[in-house]
Image 1 (tube, rainbow, N blue to C red):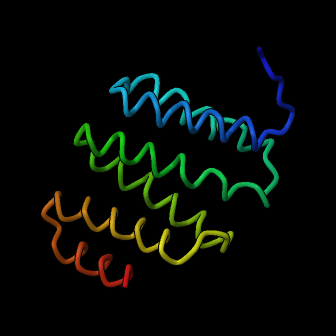
Image 2 (cartoon, rainbow, N blue to C red; image 1 turned 45 degrees about the vertical axis):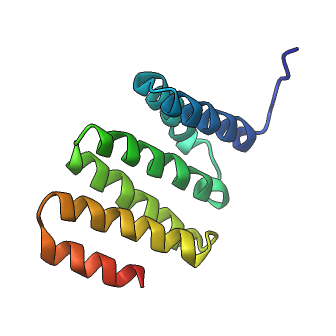
Length: 123
């Protein structure tokens, strides 16, 4: 049975879940495809809905972090925080987790001063 969804937020949510499953099954290319589909309709998505893209940015960051592409991980984690803070939708725990992830990237890069600064923001 195929269900046709018209709500872009619902479609984006399904793509994100498909990406999560692909990532868990260790299909990184498929995971990236689905995560990017969440971001693709950005120009069509109302600003009030853009916070829904934060988890996709975080998932892409995690995916590229696992590949040791730390610069791309930082770009995507920072975009995640930017969306989360602008929309003020996500709870403080989620935002702290995103900051923690940024700190872990800096730690892996051996940029300890930056890591420390970001970890303090997570508090």
